[in-house]
Image (cartoon, rainbow, N blue to C red; front, side, top):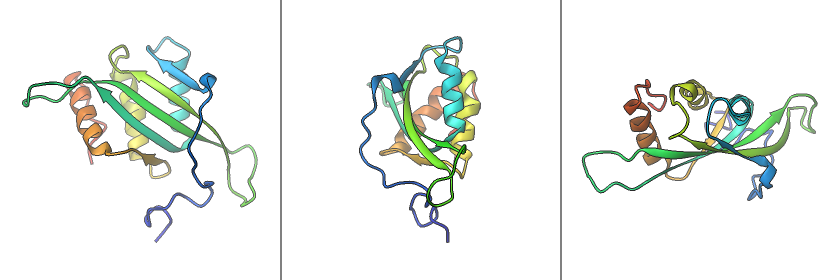
Length: 151
């Protein structure tokens, strides 16, 4: 059984501590034409750990899911340019993205999210994220996107 199957992070990761993120490492993604969008796609594909949280406006109807309006994605990036003490990749500081799902065309990001959720090489972290996944699935489905959040 490997480290991931035992519920531990891969061995090349340092112990995780609370992260204080400087403002210049926080990026708002509000459209595909901003410089932040390609940076988000690159970070998702080059991360070893990703923390996720979804935000939505509460709804009073019991017959519908709320629409997710903000997806927070914190990425711990891996640099393969050198080798660490263990001979593995060097872990760099992370970066945080605040993704405005109301302003961003959802089909433009669904592929990257599908890759993220299906990758066995990226440790995904979230608190009570099952509910977030259900709401994300509903939000993307309502915009005609094939769900990236199944299984």
